[in-house]
Length: 96
Image: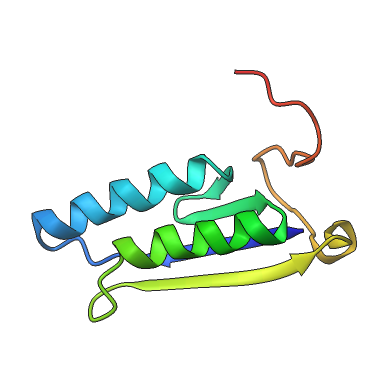
């Protein structure tokens, strides 16, 4: 299933800056960054639980925000893209 992960981390102090880096690092392991604080993650149910748990351990719920949007397996019909940044298909091979 495709899960859209979005976050807003308060970076007014060094702790916030560290949390921001940690969240991005975890998200990169599960998906593709599509905006500064937005990741598209193609995961199964078990991976989704692990991802959510990892991220919830990092954020400070008094200062930060973390949102998950569950687009499911038929996500292709739920996404429209406009603009210069190239769209990608999560199932395609990603060469680094």
